[in-house]
Length: 156
Image 1 (cartoon, rainbow, N blue to C red):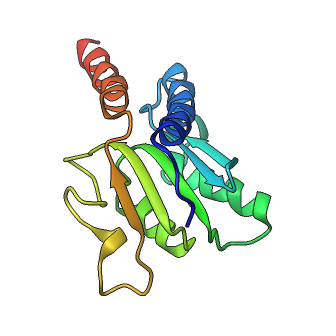
Image 2 (image 1 turned 90 degrees about the horizontal axis):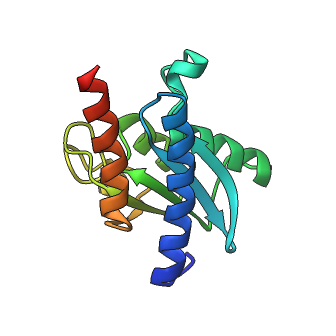
């Protein structure tokens, strides 16, 4: 599993935030994701449920799909997933199934999170694959884009 400096973690989370901005421009919930292997981004994703009319089009799913294609393999061993908001149950399951060894996320999702908030799927000892989880990289920025989105949505 790759080790990242704090500067590298912030760089890749900033790339995930760029993906979240794409969602925001499309009036989607602004969550972004990148998958990194050997210092290179091999998958990018952003929420696109409304745009594609598909419930499963979360940022992590899109990034995993792109990384699978880039790698020519469903297993994403030796890769790290960076996502702006704590993964949900579906995405946590997909992360485990893709055999990603590590997830780094920005802000917690206390109402829907499955990587430590409501559930802890990624590190559950009962499952055959466990994922190392790190929280809090660019946390304020990751939380702020979500707070601004929902504040704006409520004001409509």
